[in-house]
Length: 439
Image 1 (tube, rainbow, N blue to C red):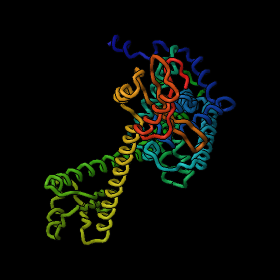
Image 2 (cartoon, one colour):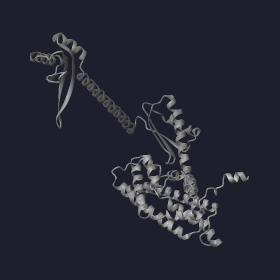
Image 3 (tube, rainbow, N blue to C red):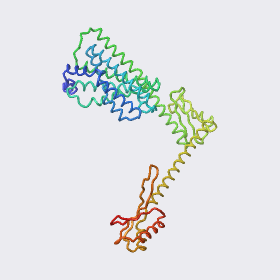
Image 4 (cartoon, helix red, strand yellow):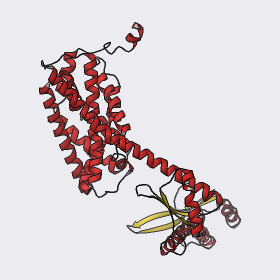
């Protein structure tokens, strides 16, 4: 038993408590360099969310100093240091407002306002975010109380992810989407509260000295406050997690129903829309050629309970409806456009291949022919050279390089040039002797 206690002993390797408290208090303030670093980190995170770059977002989380006042608040609650608590909350408020301001300005002036997956991921917090924040906060405060800080701090900054939700909240403000703002800010609040609570738990466990003598009633109030915060954060996030689970299950069972009842029977599905958030739920389907009668639709509807998707309405967009005709027209148009693009690419490839063939000469064959006409020639090489004449014009010349024991006479050079013009079907030819490179 003693060995087990020793194995999990947090006091081993612990830094002096006074030194830890001093370090925590020193890192709380957001002014000067800290504020500039925060603003730059928010800008980097906003750009990362805007371009959907996970690597950039992670980099922003690593350089952000946003976690310090949250940890400070946890230490303040654990030691009943109300002056430190006030200072921590004040600086956290400043950091939050500055972050919202910077991210809102960025997304307001950014020309790219499309909703990316990295943004959407921060708008619907669940119970899993609570767990990440709490256990990430535990790791962070344990590392803070060590003499050797080690590697956990950067990992905690990434795992608890304080920056992206704030930036997403700024995005919601910039585009006027209140649900985005509330969802992202709720996730940010979850992270703050549970990092603070994790810090409070570790501080109490390690037995940090109480700063001020408080009576039992004040201690009870603090415990009530912590409990209320936990409940306020847990209940909505638990409900959202359950709703997300139900939605995923509904989509899974719906896909299974479609696979078994349609795809495996050879029906070509051209449109599918699963609407979970409507009541009754809806599954909208359209097929390329199959048309279902009312009797068949009723039979399929009766089968839904067997696939665990009751309270669901099946909607078939049949051939007779204008919507499906338009849908088929859109599909055919898209196929025609794609076919046209492919044909254009094939034509361009053929053109480039012809161009390559036209610029490559069979020098072995040309040398054999030239030797027959000009006995002193030993070898011959022809290659096209493109010269830029002006900004938008070029000039191509076929350069002929020959080897011979003696230079060709003027008459022979003229005859060779005229023969090559006819042979190569090009008017621009320059002839050079390899030994001297003189015309």
